[in-house]
Amino acid sequence: MNTIAIANQKGGCGKTTTAINLAAELGRRNKQVLLIDMDPQGHASLGLGIGDRDLPGLYEVFSDELSFYDVVLSDVIPGVDLLPANIALAAVEPLLTGQPGRERQLLEQLEKSGELYDHVLIDCPPSLGLLSINALRAAGQVLAPVEASLFALDGIQQLHEITTMLCEKYHYDLPIRVLPVMFDSHTRFAQTILKQIREQLPVGLSGVQIRHTVRAREAAWFGKPLIDYAPHSTAALDFQRLADEILAANGQAVAIPLTEDHEENDMDPISKKPQRQMVVMNFDEIDCKRLQLAGDFNNWIPDHDIETRNINGHWQKVFTAAPGVYEYRIVVDGKWQQDPTNSSEIPNELGGINSLLQIPVHH
Image (tube, rainbow, N blue to C red; front, side, top):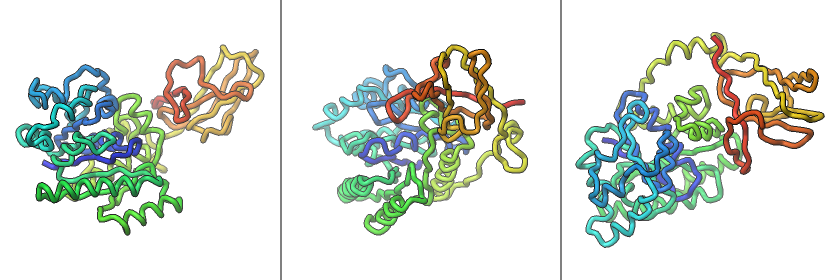
């Protein structure tokens, strides 16, 4: 059983996104995977469409209210079982404080109940408290997602220090593999961060870099992994390569199952990219002098590559795009806003709301 703690005490660095999508990719390869959500916020559970905050989890297991198997949800996605988290998990540390073997509680549960799985992935909370210590103690390796930021080196240094302490205390080896996430490898700053990690820290560095894409955030919003939501996105391909790397490091085959026939049919036979198709959007209830459209499909440049038609006050926008789900906003007389005629929406990174447009595959 290959147990990986996905850890970094810094929040917002892609731990949960990594946990969900690596689990999905391993499950896709016919591996039996258990994903353990150890964050009281339960974001890994939410990211797989499990929104019931009353589901029991590790707190109930550690308090002997329920058994390990009682709380595991089977096949939340193909090949992947989930041990969900709820807010009660925040009370685990007071529960375990003073108990003998408090750092081994998760390890003991996995030793008794985890033999069914090829891989166990643990999504750690953004701290180095007792929950994370339990995850690190149970793991055979650590995968540390790191974004290109001023705090990246400090976070990995602290993680290395805590793992070194555990290794010395319990006499075992716990290697750390750093995974660059949300990286633009063409920038000088990102290259500097990677160079400093290689030269200054005694950790491994993954050969894979997870590129930034809004598709990852959208997929989590809809409770799906990228291979189901946006299989042709750059990050989806990166997570495929990460799964290959993990399997190869454990001496396992890395063959990827063949795609479904309809996926091949949706691709341009020469470029192997999804075929673009005409999209017509109608805005009948917006009274303005000027209406523009901007989104993922035109690099957020208002009306770029878009034909505008105004027929008796009814606005129509015509453009081409590949099948998929896109975020967009409209610009009404110079003011950016969400589309009031569309109830499908998602929060954006600036605290506002973007509208969502789904372009289905044309058969």
